[in-house]
Each structure stands twice: as C-alpha cells, then as structure tokens.
Image (cartoon, rainbow, N blue to C red; front, side, top):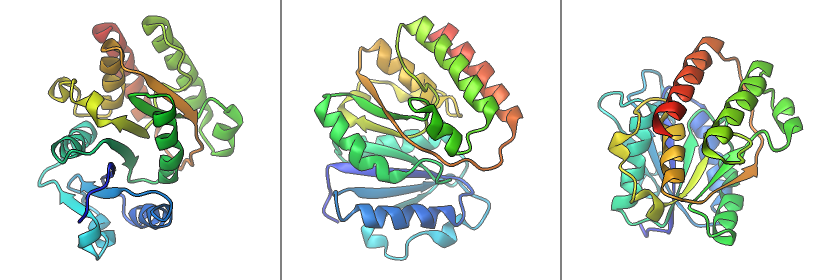
Length: 233
C-alpha cells in the first residue's frame, strides 16, 4: 500500500454493522482526499469482525487479543501513526456517532490555523445538539463540566468532551501516552497534557446522532473528569 500523509483510525468495540456504515462514508470521502484506514478492534464479543472489509490490501486491520480499554486502544492506534510516519491522524469511534466525513474540514482547519489538533464541538451551535437528539442531561452536564474546565485552565472551549479529533502527529510525539488513562478519560487527559505543553487546539462545530444511553456511566465519567482537572492542572 502506498502510504498517505493522513491516517484515519477507527477504534471499535462491539460496533457490529455500524462499522460498515463508516466504511461506506470513507469510501465516498476517499474520492476527495487521500488517507489510509486503520481499524483497531478491542476484542469485541459481538459480530463486529464480520463487517471488516474484504479487501485487506486497502486497510490496516488489527484485533487486540485482549480488551485494552478505550484509551488503551487509542494509544495503540496513535503509536501506529507515529511508527509509520504519518503527518496527521483522525480518530473515529466505531459506533458512528461522530461523522468521519468531517475529516476534510478538520484537515483544512488544522493547516489554516497551524494547529496541533482540531476537535469537534456539538455545543457551538446548540440547535445542532438538540436536532441530533443529544439528551438534555448531557447538554446540561457538558455545559457545567466544560465551564469548570475553562475556569481551571483559562480556556474557551465550548465542548470539552468530544470524541472526534485530528492530531498533528508531531505534537503527539512530545507526550508520554503511557501516563494517560487507558479508559474513557483518555481524551480529557490528553487534552490537558497538550495544553500544558502549549499545544494549539481548535474547535469546529459538528453534528452527531445519539441513541439510547445509560446515564450512570456519564455520572462516573463526570466524577473522574473533575478529578482529572484537580489532579492534572
């Protein structure tokens, strides 16, 4: 495979048919911008692997022998980007909540602003979050936690909990990923470490689609999020 400058990596766990939806979008997007695709499955227990692309020459496919956790899986993908000398890497969740087609906008933005990372914001245009069926408790919780984050770190983010990122790989090389959480607080801790190293993070508005979710998980996440802010500031 002839390597491009951009790696799109998809972290999957029990994603099932949603992986196929993402790959169909990427196939269309590939007509506009060149990128490679890494699919990293975190030891799924469902039929996710049935939806792996058949043409393995066009994709990098990885299946973890044991579950590494969300953060652990992302670290593995970032290390892949670093080892294989990619310039930029885009993180996509296998549940298709975040639209991979934002890659084109993210890439233009990271070049325009000479940023170290570009992330999405569901809250820049609040109406987009409502149309995307973002639960009310998440909207309120996001506003509160993002406000706390901004107060502590003197930032102006509108959405400090977003799961789609385009990174300049050079910026990631200066960060010790081994000291970041292997769980769902990985994104928040990496954001903090990038800020402490004076890296430039830019937000652009995005739309997402929500399905049924359990609020108990988000309460635990919120508690850990606040702990991170206190201990890592």
